[in-house]
Image (tube, rainbow, N blue to C red; front, side, top):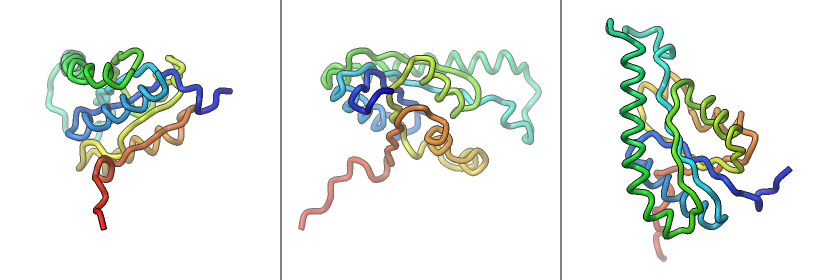
Length: 164
């Protein structure tokens, strides 16, 4: 069993919300401190999760593949922007993956697949109906992950304390 000192691979889920850049840069900083590899993950939500809602008549396989393709393009440009910080912080490798399915399940499965040693993720992503309907992804990941999970509240992190 590894101790927290043995962190070699860090997995960071992102959702392309406004908070994603700060979460990814924070994870890159930590990965650099551990001289670790970093894996960014984005999960396209399954349409099956929206079964109680009206979904317009269209070809689901085509729509889902277009969503994955679009997410892969977005991930590629996100990684290009993050690469400079990763190099600056000493991240040994930056890779990314896009999956489709249940967000928390896909994150936990991927961490197991790459033998991840730590997950660094935000506590808040996109807000609104999705959060109310599906609960907290971070909470589900914390409960299911076989490695430590560092959660970052993007609304509290990075704010300098007031000086007295």
